Amino acid sequence: MNTLNKIGILGYGKMGKEIFDLFHSKMPDSEFVVLLRHDIAEETEKVNKNLAKALRRKKISEEVHEKMSRNFLFTDKLDDFSDCTLIIETVAENLKVKQDLFAELDEKVNDQCVFATNTSSLTISEIFSSCKNDRKTMGLHFFYPLKLTGFIELNECGDPDTCRAIAEITGKSTVDFTGNYCFYLNQYIFYCISHAFILAEKYNTGILKAMDILNELFPMHSLFGMADSIGLGLMLSGTTDTSVKRIKSVLDSGREKMNNYLAAGCSPETGKFIEFVTEQEKGKDATETDSESFILDMISGILNEAVHAASENDGNLTEALYDAIGLSEKFSFYYEKYGYGKISESLDAVRTYTGIGSYETADKNLYDRYFC
Image 1 (cartoon, one colour):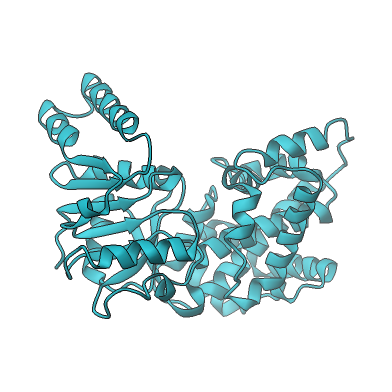
Image 2 (cartoon, helix red, strand yellow; image 1 turned 45 degrees about the vertical axis):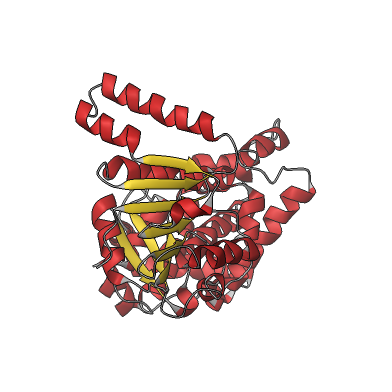
């Protein structure tokens, strides 16, 4: 089994930083090397300041502080990765950039080093196409923010032992996908956001009123808040390939609505969507809305797609889906609350409104199997 005694991280953006922080905090006896093209001294100082703060607050011991302040290196040289046992790539979603990085590293590291990519959309085999045939590779997709998500999505995992070790170290569960279901958690999140856009239009609420209605379902972060924190540009670029064709029409509807916001002047960047709709909807009269029906329609869409997906996959998929969207209660709670009849009626109404076949209700025996 690969021992994770030296971990390399390629990139130190939003995800790279969180992945480094997660592993660094859990593995004081391991070494870390992080590829960073600029501000190496500044980022090193920031890590050391945070470690000093943790020591003052007695969150870590002096012994651990000593280890953690010496066990990492920010570098712009790929040669520094030569003795890594695991390398996790977190750079921008550009296939050639990823391919070139791994092709160069493949010549520098030993054959036992495992290559992992945090890609959320690109084909795993294409990313590693220039690597040795016997190189162990995998898609290791973390979700942002890491502290609020309990799952890691594995895609085309070529080293189950390393996957199990990562899960044990990080305290997170894993869900393994292959074939059409690679990156399904991202597609499911985008499906739920697209479904929320559809309902905001159906009930003529606008985005802010819809967020208020759905707050009881998503107390930590709303679906529209997720779109805001990710940014419409990144959401659209990361969901261009819908491998699960069942939900394509819902996702296409979501893409159309997001593109309409961009065309109206919304920035594609992180943290700009809610700001834009707040200004756009300022002064508009709030319409009377059947909030309970809105919530039922939201839950029905969420549960129905989860049932369809679970019936085509093994393992703890429904738990991962629940965790990915941050729902306030387990799926089983809402199935018990509303029952199959109300859910089916709700989906029929949404399907009639949209003309989208994705809302066809799954069989009752599947609901009972996964939610009872």
